[in-house]
Length: 100
Image 1: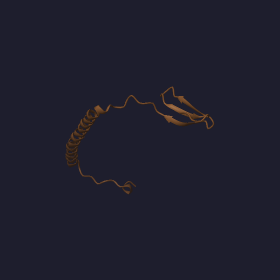
Image 2 (image 1 turned 180 degrees about the vertical axis):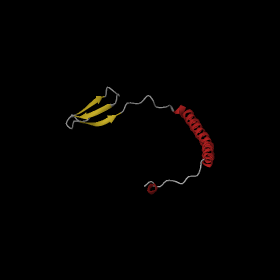
Image 3 (image 1 turned 180 degrees about the horizontal axis):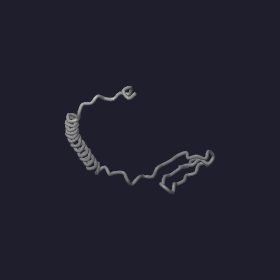
Image 4 (image 1 turned 60 degrees about the vertical axis):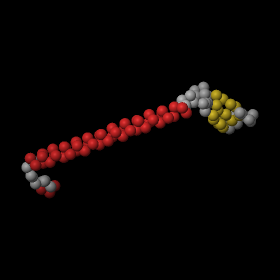
């Protein structure tokens, strides 16, 4: 792949990609990644899509349940605060100039 005399083709020991380095410039001119073994097979695409759809539905259902429970919890807390406010005596609030 190296076309010029000043270019050298080097394989990266870490990732296995192919680098073309120009010795005159002192930089990488070209980079080619190795084929990844993690690519899904096209036959598995339908199964993967179905799994993702089920996962999305489960997350959605969980969020719906938590929102329903949140409504009930907030209304209970409001009722408790209202009862507590009814039981407390009514007092005149203190202002800054009242303290002088």
